[in-house]
Image 1 (tube, one colour):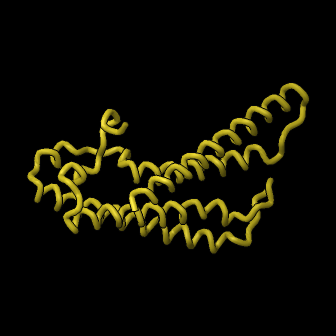
Image 2 (image 1 turned 60 degrees about the vertical axis):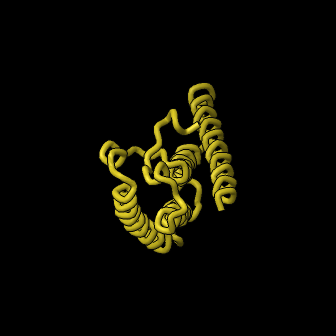
Image 3 (image 1 turned 180 degrees about the horizontal axis):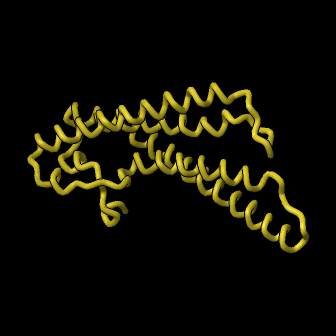
Amino acid sequence: MERIFDLYCAFLKAVIALCLAVMVVLVFGNVVLRYGFNSGITISEELSRWLLVWLTFLGAVVAVREHTHLGVDTLVRMLPAGGKRICFIINYGLMLWADWLLLTGSWRQTLINIDDRAPATGLSLGIFYFAGVVFGVSAGILLLYDLFRVVSGQASEADMVAVRESEEHG
């Protein structure tokens, strides 16, 4: 399972890099065309904004996998293993609840906006909101997996501290 998640995150990182590269080309190309040739790429701003949203949500999935979201673990690190386990379960329960809210809200927005078209690209606005659905499903699976490992006793005491220092993540 770990290998599947690692491959999935490697794929997401490649997609994120592609989104960033396309954004750079679109924005830089648009600037050059506007100032140098008094024209521009009509879809540049809209598509760049959409790509930014997608790369943010995909990056958040990778951060969930790598435990690199911002967090405070001062108290948790001082607790014994049982206390860490209880805090981890409460923490992940709350994150799963927030993830569920984001997932259901994004799904509803996707359905509501599926037939609406973006002004510049003409693409379905459902694509824009579907980024939250992809995040919600992906993060939910990752969170449930980590929670299962802790509840089943497969996780080490260090795994129950859900925050990683940047030096630890290497």
